[in-house]
Length: 102
Image (cartoon, rainbow, N blue to C red; front, side, top):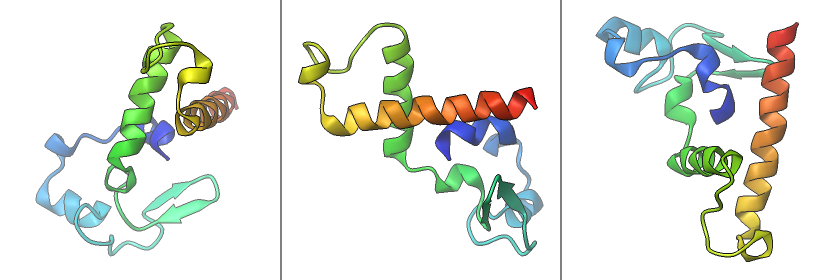
């Protein structure tokens, strides 16, 4: 989900109280089907559904694309969870790009 957030173009600072209610900022949106992404449907604002850890992995991915790893050493010195996250992020980014090309 975190990789797809830019698609929604959400800015919490610009969201009015009515918008927060409709979009499901604090509680589920009263509008059925308010949020849809591919086969997913959810009732809360996508920004509220993304965990902080996911944002941290996206930051690590950004630095990875620039040639930096978060821990000293090479690939074998990185946590398995990080490697799995980087692979997952890359796959999702490819899906986003394919979606945009259609």
